[in-house]
Structures are given as C-alpha cells and as structure tokens.
Length: 60
Image 1 (tube, rainbow, N blue to C red):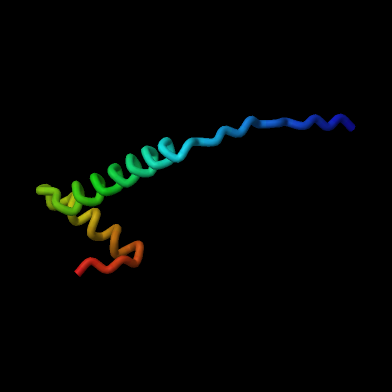
Image 2: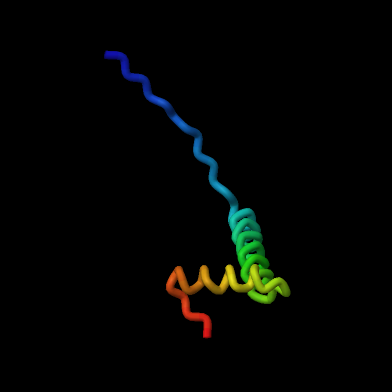
C-alpha cells in the first residue's frame, strides 16, 4: 500500500488584515440588509421580509 501525505501551508493574517476583512464583511452585510429592507420595489422588500420570517427573526 502506498500512502502519501499532503501538507498544506498555513498563513496567518495580521491583526490589521483581520480587522479590514471583518469590516468589509460587516459593510457588505449591512449594505445588503439596509438595501433590501428599504428597497423601493415591493418585491425586493417582501422577499427580504419573508426570508426574515422563514429564518425565525421577528421584524415588527
């Protein structure tokens, strides 16, 4: 039997890189949440509303 090991390199990010990545993820999430929550098109707003209820989050 022939077994070979695969090693993967690990990279560590600095604190500033992690903060930037977290900030960008937060900004994207808030943009999506606010963009669909206050959308002028009722279909986008209702889709976001129904998704909140399907996930168990209250909205009113």
